[in-house]
Amino acid sequence: MEKGATPMTFRRYEIYDVFTSEVLKGNPLAIVHDSQGLDDEAMQRIAREFNLSETVFVLPAKNAAHTAWVRIFTPDYEMPFAGHPTVGTAVSLAQNRFGEVENDQDALIILEEQVGPVRCGVRLGKHGAFAEFDLPKLPQRVDYNYDKVAIARALRLERDEIGFENHVPSIWDAGVPFLLVPIRGLASAARIRIDQAAMQRIAPRIGHRQLPVYAYCRETVGHENDFHSRMFVSDEGTYEDPATGSATAAFAGAIHLFDEPLDGVQRFSIEQGYEMGRLSKLELELDIKDKAIISARIGGAAIKVAEGKLFV
Image (cartoon, rainbow, N blue to C red; front, side, top):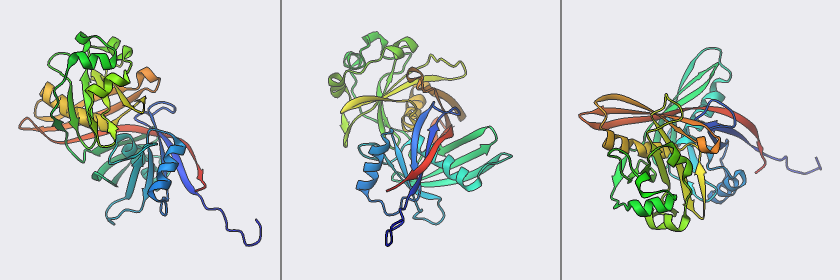
């Protein structure tokens, strides 16, 4: 080092695959630790550098009783809440706290997100890590007058492939709003191709983005699962997300409305990412009392695939 030069500082980062216990499956997530001193512009540029669906920046908690304050960025904007960043970050922080464990180890992680504090339970063990978070906001239905023909055109499907049983297209918001589209089955799911121009006519803009579309069906690839899903963001270009916790949170509202689950704890397994070769599994639990959702949780596995130093 030259005389008088300032030592280069760095921030540690990790890459996790989330909603899977296998590397190179699930939904990849970048986590930047020690993010103090980064302003909004720097975080946005770093998220664009990683170019994953989301990048998390970990900061000291504002409330001493909480674990960390986290900010979640896509390559284009900041998110108030997202599921796979919550699961991945909770697992990362627990693993950084306890290191390698010989026996099962439970941890409580409370993340401060824009939507509010998010309580996460983490279970670490020899065979992997699993995190489950309480929904910070229960799903609420948004008024929407759907047009089956227009929706079918936007997904490049036939009209009779939209809807099954009593499920119809609807918009739900549990922190992030989604247009939920029930489709006939796996063959229909495999044939979805997004028509961006048509999408703009069926999915309203909310804030700075086109409403994402979450298509789902009852038929599944894995017989142990309850629903098969695909999620598409269609704005300036279209991309598919392999595992979407915030969409699953919204989907809880549709399950409750259309399937009318009985009182008690009701569990659902949702598969996603199959068409992308990024198999993912999301676990949804609903606590039902007097036919109403009183609380809900989403969980999944996560596994670290990379780590390094960010010289910013």
